Image (cartoon, rainbow, N blue to C red; front, side):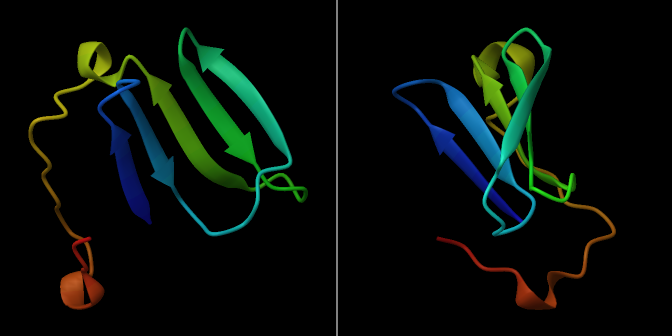
Length: 71
């Protein structure tokens, strides 16, 4: 899983897999779910992220961190 935040557009994208999205569904104002061709969820796009979440902090819990990488 990867998290990408774009300051210029104030958008947060949560990559759940490396699979290419084939379909999208806006489930709330500015929140779009991306799906693979087989219907599996591959990503979450949050527009105006700073008004929807505290993007200044990130907390991880109960995750296998042995492969944790910072970019």
